[in-house]
Image (cartoon, rainbow, N blue to C red):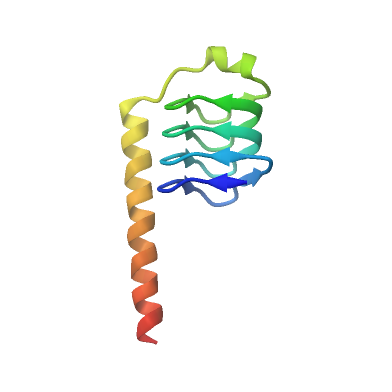
Length: 108
């Protein structure tokens, strides 16, 4: 299992190997990723299940979508600008929070 940099994995998500999750990926809450490669810039919104496939760069998986193979990907559109902006803002906030938590911990 590998997870890239600037990737945001929301609460209650399950990433179960074998998996490779690339850089700048957003995985929404309650989503399940199993036996997949998720390439750079993908967005998997909340309550989705993605298994046994390769998500190419910049793929957008809408909320509550279930993907069980590469064939299922033919119906999925690429990441929208709004989805990318949202994912980037969440990742930036997570990094900021992590830095703040470390500063607080070092002061104690």
